[in-house]
Length: 362
Image 1 (cartoon, rainbow, N blue to C red):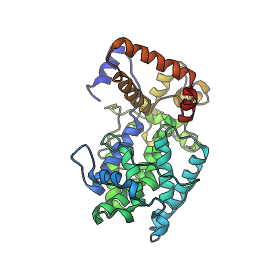
Image 2 (tube, rainbow, N blue to C red):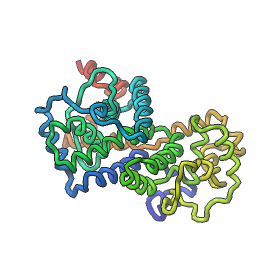
Image 3 (cartoon, rainbow, N blue to C red):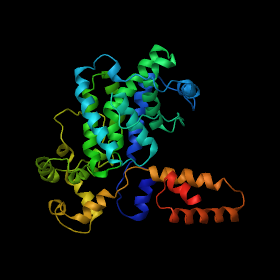
Image 4 (cartoon, rainbow, N blue to C red):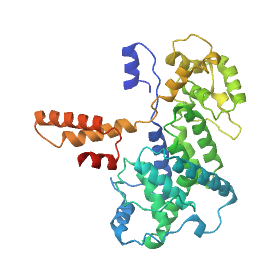
């Protein structure tokens, strides 16, 4: 952040850049710390508990599982969030807007764990679970908690997995699902911090708070301005945000808000993070030299904000894809020919589903 690659890029270009940290990476860091708090650290590339579950999958009775409805009633502090999350999950599953199958799987598993379901219940076989895929840890934790009665897990591990599954299903999944929406990021980060502060399991809540507090990119003076374009933020709060644009900027002017010493309560508001430096978002995204209040209705600016990439999923998939194809052949000429065939196929099959690809190949 002080002398890394992005700093050198800004110096070479001679201008300031927006630093958009990957939202999924931030949330993966949070989940990693919560998981290790509940289940203990893993020193190797694999997690033995997950490996054993994967090997036993075929022998499990997938029609026999335990949800929250089969347990003692939840603490009152969790029952209302559970009901709210059930409504949220049913809504997003019904609109079919999930970009990937594993995202859809996690949403459905969380809904099932909370005691509801959307359509026919089908469990996918456990997949990759290496340390780089922390969303897989969420899937494994929820799935193993559903089938805990058949797994004969040690009490400590079973209890830890249940804590993780509960946090993922009641709190975490909403923020993961909405991570792709740029204008939602400031409000979601603030709400997640506040939710961790109020979480009934104080140890889990404190661990989540510590992890997230080290990655408050979107509550920084630069990126807090994304909240101006969030339709969920009330007009009164946006008015206070506009008023705070005259506040002096901090002397450090860091790209990421320093969470150390930051105290967030239920009364903390988005406007409290806004300063005169927050105008930079408007300056970098539009050529119009007007007060931000006059720019909020600019549809071109709104579209630019909503087109910002705040997750690097597409880059990760592209790297994985090119590695797969680059290693398929040794001859460079054949490799280039293969890549041209792939490019042609992608133009002929714009809808990249299994069904569309199968139909094309026939």
